[in-house]
Length: 59
Image 1 (cartoon, rainbow, N blue to C red):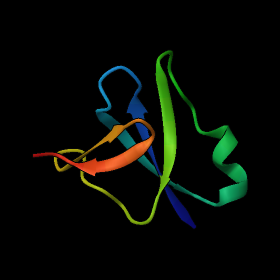
Image 2 (cartoon, one colour):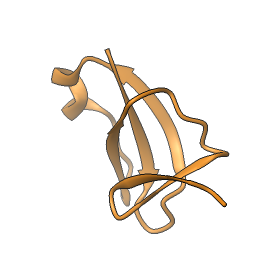
Image 3 (cartoon, rainbow, N blue to C red):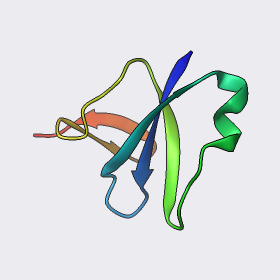
Image 4 (spheres, rainbow, N blue to C red):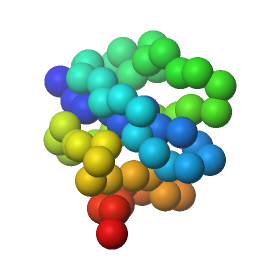
């Protein structure tokens, strides 16, 4: 199993973390303006955000 962070493309705020096999990643439901990246572990939306497709820790 892998973890995927679903985030708002404009703000980088993580909306959800999904656990699923890699081959099912393309079936993750995305609303308009959302995207996802694979992350190494389950991440806290309060501590991380996504910038330019990279997971970074909030300051």
